[in-house]
Length: 113
Length: 111
Image (cartoon, rainbow over all chains, first blue to last red):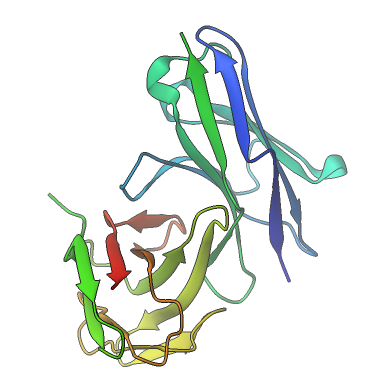
C-alpha cells in the first residue's frame, strides 16, 4: 500500500527564513504526489502536484517541491517565509487503482515575526 | 463560481442519533470522497464514489453510510454505530486531472 510520512508535526521559522517541510513516500510504482495547505477550520487547498513530468514542481504562493526518486522524497520549500504562510500542510500520494489520495499526518508551520 | 458546498458547517448531536452531512459539487466531477480529520492524524478516507450509483468503502467506513443518486451529491450519514463521531469531516471531488478539490468542512460534535 502507498503511504506518506511527514517528518515533524510542528515547524517554526522566522519571517524571511527558508521553509522546509519534509515528506517521504512509499510506493511500488511511480506515484502522483501532492502538497495541500489548510487554514484553521477550512478545507484543503492544492499547493502543487507532481505527475512524473518535471522533477522540480512550482506551486502557488512561492512554494516548490522536488521529487527525488532515489530518496523517495518530495519535500516542500519556500525561500522566504511570510506570516501568511502559517497553516497546516499535508503531503498526499495517489493510490494505484483508485483515485482517492492517502494523506500524511500533517505539519503545522508557525512563522515568528 | 464552481466548487464544493458542505452543510452544515457546525453540527451537534446527542449520542444515539444519526446525522447526515450534505456535500454538493458543481464541478461536473465524476469522483467524490469523504474524509475524516482528527488532530495529529491527518485525513482518513471514509467512503468514495467514482460514478453515480456506485461507491466503495475507504479505510474507516464502519459506522458510516453514503449514497450517490446524483452526480452532484454525495451525502454522508454518521450512524449511532460510530463510536467516536466527533471530528471534522471533509468532502472532496476530482476530475481527470487527479487532484482533489475540497469543501470547507463540517464539524460534528457529540454531546
